[in-house]
Amino acid sequence: FNYMKKLLQEKKMGLAKLLSNNKRYVDDLATINYLYFHYIIKDIYPQPLEMERAGNNNKIINYLDLNINISDKGLEISVYNKTDDFNFHVVSLTFPYGNIPLEIGYNVFFSQILRYGIICTSLDLLTPHIHRIFTILVNRGYNRLILIKNLRRCFKKYNSVFRKFGIYDDSTIIHNLP
Image (cartoon, rainbow, N blue to C red; front, top):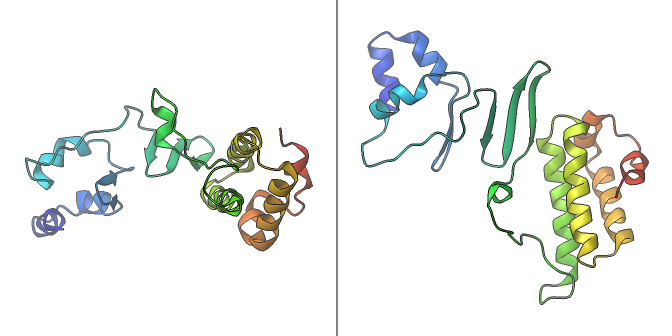
């Protein structure tokens, strides 16, 4: 805020406008439209605060749980999971025969399908995420038919979310499940 105020006082409207689209959540910051942000970080944030750039690609960035790709097609957004980048396996979904009630696993599946639908900008980006979580849960012992029922229930209840993909009938997605 203080830096932006200073820019306005110094009549640096162009830079102020470029930086006005920054997105910050706790300690994550995204600056999509200004390539030289790393040069002014020290003017904005105090010395003890370490800021580091994640990746060197100016067209593809990961921010929170989003993978943002600026391509010839426009802005393509998909799901990003930081744990996929770790060099070890992270268990993030429940097992059906543990201490956690079985319904929670199915409800997590439902909520993840909805989250993927909200985040992804195309069916080509959505489908691999659905297939991945579906496969993981089936391999862990969840009932395939109950998962499909939850998928259908999600598509029906939140049809306005999935309509952007041209999904008016869930049979295409379900038919292509692994």
